[in-house]
Image (cartoon, rainbow, N blue to C red; front, side, top):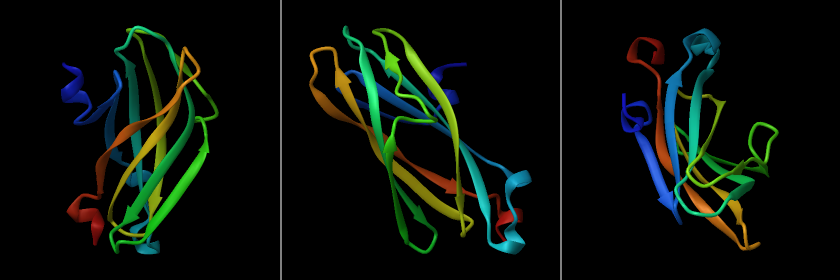
Amino acid sequence: MTVLALFPFHATTRDVTVHVAVTFLPEQSEPDRGRWFWAYHIRIENQGDQPVQLLTRHWIITDGRGAQHVVDGDGVVGEQPVVQPGKSYDYVSGCPLNTPTGSMKGSYRMIGAGGETFDVAIPHFALIAPPAVAE
C-alpha cells in the first residue's frame, strides 16, 4: 500500500509533508449524549536535506454548526520531535466533537538546522460519523 492510500490528506511546506488519516471511534462516542470521537494519525515527512524540529502546534477545529475552537500548544503528544532528512515521525491523537461532523486544519511551527522558524501546513480534513451513528 502506498502512503497516499493510507493517508488521504496531505500538504507540503518547505520539503516537509504532513499526511493525515482519520478514523471515527464508535466505542468512544456517545451520540445520545452529544459526543462523537475521532482518532487522527499524522505522519510528518522531512524530504529536505537538513533536520527540522517541531516546536508548537496550532489547530482550528470546526464543529458541524460552524463553531471554531483553537488549540495551541508545545509539541505533539508531549514531544517536540526532530525529524532527520529522509525520515518521518508518526503520532496518533484524538478529537471529540459535540456534533457528528466537523473538520480540522492547522499548522506546526518548525525550526530548521540554521535556527530559522517556519510554519508547516496541516491539511484540512473532515470528521464525519457514519450515518447510522450520526443520528
